[in-house]
Image 1: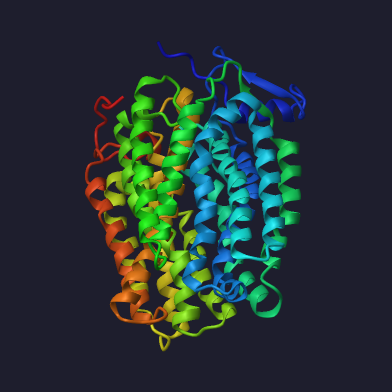
Image 2: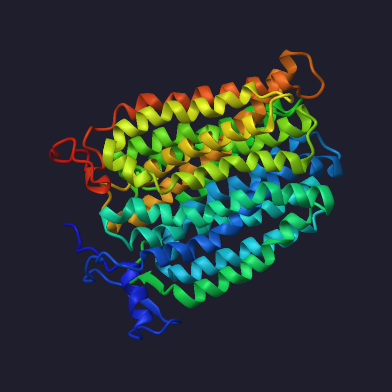
Amino acid sequence: MLRPRRRGIASVNAEVRDGIVPAGGSIAMTPDMGAPAASRNYRLVALIIASALFMEFVDATVLATALPTMARDFGVRAQDMSVALTSYLLALAIFIPASGTLADRFGSRTVFRTAIVLFTLGSLACGQSPTLEMIVVSRFVQGIGGAMMIPVGRLVLLRSVAKQDMVSAMSWLLVPALIGPIIGPPLGGFIVTYLDWRWIFYINLPMGVLGLWLTGRFIANVREERPNRFDVLGFVLSGIALGCLLFGFEMASRPGREWISAGLVAIGIVAGLSYITHAKRREGAILDLSLLKDDTFRLSVIAGSLTRITQGAQPFLLPLMMQVGFGFTAARSGTITVATAIGSLAMKSFAPRILRRFGFRRALIANGFVATAGYAVCGLFRPDWPTWAMFGVLMLAGFFMSFQFTAYNTIAYDGIDKRQMSSATAFYSTFQQLMLSLGICIAAVALHLATLAHGHETPTISDFSSAFWVVTAISLSATIWNLRFAPHAGTEISGHSGQAIPARQGK
C-alpha cells in the first residue's frame, strides 16, 4: 500500500521563513505529512541550490581550458590529463548512489554542507598538487563532495514543486549554474595565460564559504523519520563496478596499458552483474532497479545516457583541439568555447513553451538530431575558420543540447511517486555522471586510436575530427529510444494537449 505523500521542502522552508520552524532546526519527514502545495518560493530554493552548484560548473569548465598547460607542467601528454577529469567524475558515479540514503538519515542541510566542505578542501589540495597523481587524488575528494551536492540539491527541488511547475523549476535551477560555464572558459584562459593554473582551484574557496552560508541560512535540515538501512554490500559492488569500468576505459587510451584496461573492465562487468543479482533480492537497494519498470524513467535514463556521451566528450576535446591542434592560446580557446554555455543559458526561457507546443516525444526526436549535428560540425573546425563562425556553431549546439537535457531531466520523474524521489534522483544522477565520465573515456580512446591509425606522434586536426564524429555517432543512436516514448508522455508536466491521456503503464 502506498503511503500518503510527504510534505515538501518548500513548505518547510516557508515555515522557517514565517518563524514556525527555527532556521537551525531539524525536521523529520513522517508518513502523515501531506503533499507539498505548489509553493511560490520554489524559485528561491532553486537559486539557493544553484549557488552551491555554481562552483562545480566553474571548476569543471576552467579546468578543461587549463589541461594542456597542466600537462606541460607535469611532464605528460595532453591527452593523458583526461584522468584528472575522469577521477572527479568517477567519484561522482561511485558516491552519488549513497547520497539519497545519507540525506534521509542525517538531513538534507547536513549532507549538503558537508559536500561543500569536501569540495572546497579538495580544491585547496588540487592547487597544492605537485604531480598528476596527486591532483587525481585531490580531484577524487572534490568528486565525493560533488556527488552529494548534485542529487541532494535536485531532491530538495523535486520535493518542492507541483508537476506543472517542474519544467520552470528545473530551468531556474540550471540558469545560475550555467553562469559557471559562461565565466569558466575565459576565466580559465586568463588565469592560465597571465597567472598560474593553480589559481583555477583557489577561486573555489570564497565560493565555498558563500555556499555554506546560504545553505545554513535558508535550507532546513529535513530528514526521514524511518530511513532505509544503508545498503553496504550494494554500495561496495556498485562502487567496484563503476570504478573498474571507468578506469578500464580510461586506461585503454594509454599505450602499453591494454591488459590492465581489459582486466579492469572484466572485474567491472562481474561486479555489475553481482550487483544486479543483489539488488533483485534486497529491498531498498542503493540503486533501485525497480524504478526501470516505469516507462518514461527507463527511456529517459537510456536515451539521456547515450546523449551524454557527446556532452562529456565536448569539454575534453574542444580545448585540446584548439590549443594542441590549432595552436591557439588558452585565452583564445576559452573565449570561443564559452559559446556553448551562452547558448545553453539562452535556451532556458524557451523550453516550457516548446514542450507545451510540441510535447516531449516530438521535441526529443527532432531536437536530438539537431543537437547532435551541431557537435558533429565541430569536427569540421579548422584554424582558418573565422572565430565568429566557430562561436556561432558552438552557441547553437549548446542551445539545442541544453534543451535536450532539460527535457530528459524533467520527463524522467513523470511517473515517479514522491516517496521514491530520493531513490530516483540518486539512480538518475549516477547514470548521468557515469555517462559523462564515459564520454571523456571514449573521446580519449577514439583520439588515441585515430592518432595510431594515422601514424602521428601527437594528435593532429584530423585525429580530433575523427574523435568528434565517433562520440556524436554514439549519441545519435538515442533517437531509437526517443521514438519509444509514448505520444502522451509528460503531458501533465508540459501542458501539451495534442494527445489524449490514456491510463499510465509501466507503473
